[in-house]
Amino acid sequence: MNSSPLIDQLVEAFRCLPGVGPKSAQRMTLHLLERNRAGGQKLSQSLIQALDKVGNCSLCRTLTEEPVCRICASPSRSQNICCVVESPADVFAIEQSNFFRGVYFVLMGHLSPIDGIGPEQLGIAQLLEKVQQGVIEEVILACNSTVEGDATAYYIADQLQGLDVIVSRIAHGVPVGGELEFVDGGTLTHAFSGRKRMENA
Image (cartoon, rainbow, N blue to C red; front, side):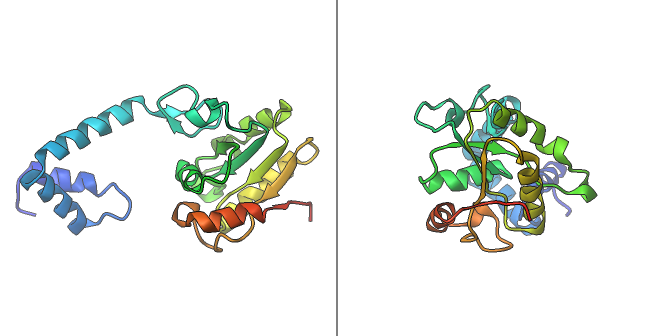
């Protein structure tokens, strides 16, 4: 592009977002510069603050600017039922259904040896430590219905064998190959209601 280097730089910066190609990035850049500079300032300030202050909850690993997230700290949440999900986006999706009232554990990914993601990167040792404390009575595995998600769920279920905890998996109301953040609340409610205990093969 034969435009200002700063414009090119901003277009390229927008392309780091998922699903944003060259044309979309160019449209967003020109919109902010032509019509909404105040919005651009607000966006940049919010982004800087979030990147500087948002980290991980010490209990569940979801994203938060506080040492313990508001879900884990809420007295209205049941601490004896823990839902294991792959990402903070999955927490948002489940929370929008207003059905689950327990707490979460966020893996921040799934097992993928090719990408160098193993149990250590997913914090599975931290999850086991939480369960061994004896407060959690049921672990609901809500990994995505993908090959990697299934492998992750079965690995965690195997690690939890022998501990005094019920291990269940959400029912397949969630479509195979689908991801939780794109599933509607009604489908998620049915999936949670129909969860089944996982047994060794």
